[in-house]
Length: 203
Picture 1: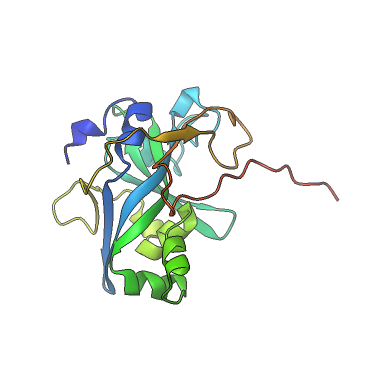
Picture 2 (picture 1 turned 90 degrees about the horizontal axis):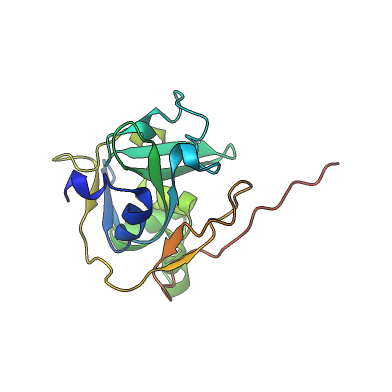
């Protein structure tokens, strides 16, 4: 994997990640997933991006270089992760939404507290929070170079995806909700269901 492949426009990088493999190795062992669903976030031009209002301590990794992991905590309970894309200084990232566990499935089941079954295995990394849990990725993974030799979290070429990706609006966004910047492998059972943003009702 060359860093230059991730340094292009995020709307080109995002679908390119489909079919690639993310492998995480910890003291417990290794788990790898084939990526099946992603979302693009385009920094200062994108109200849905964490970098829309500029650089902060939280989003600093998004400002490059490309190929690093941006991990954040959301809703007070979940971690989500992104691959940083685009030229250095132009913050953009690709949210990893779902994947198929292709290595270390027993460890992934243990982390997700799921039994061995076709349905449970489909759901092991189906959604961005589940994906982080299955791979054992938490806040400490933020800033990891995914392309460095012997990195504990690696982005690998994998089988790839040569077809035409499906596209649609990103999940759960309040701002820029209509942009079709979610990409997924059509008919793949590990892709997560689409859910629009639902405003909270005032008491």
